[in-house]
Amino acid sequence: MEQPKPFLTPPPDDPRIGYSVTRRADGGMSYVFTASDHDTLIHWREFAARHLETADHHTRNLYDLRSLRYLSEEALKFALEAASDPAARNVRTAIVVASPAIGAALEEVGLISESGDLRVFHSIEDAEHWLAHPFS
Image (cartoon, rainbow, N blue to C red; front, side, top):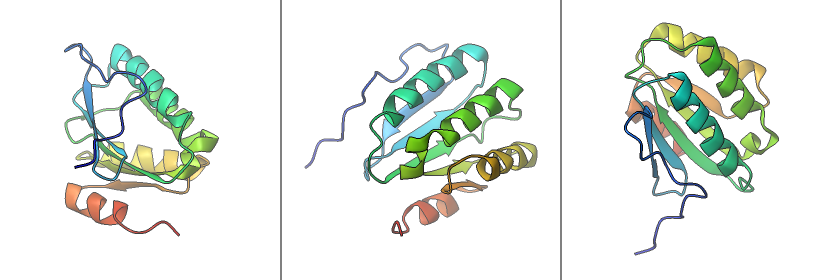
């Protein structure tokens, strides 16, 4: 069995950081957020930026934000920054939310960013179905 691609920087191991990340079978990453406080956002920003540096091929990432009821302006700013990175053009990003307000805010991020492959979903199944589509 093939070993998953290693992370360029270690995923969070501090319980105060409100997200976890694992490698997907397709080589992308699956994030689960339980908090969006400043320390969590700073850690994620550095982790994601480091991985975008080597995003030279099509990658599929899943963000599970269903535990979150609110996203701060800082979180939206960081999301827009990551989605606007030129390397994000190589990343298909599915974001799963429970809150309609968070979904609407993140759809706006997708519209104004450089990324054409960022979509918001309300179920993991729908997100996975979209992620599985071939890149065109």
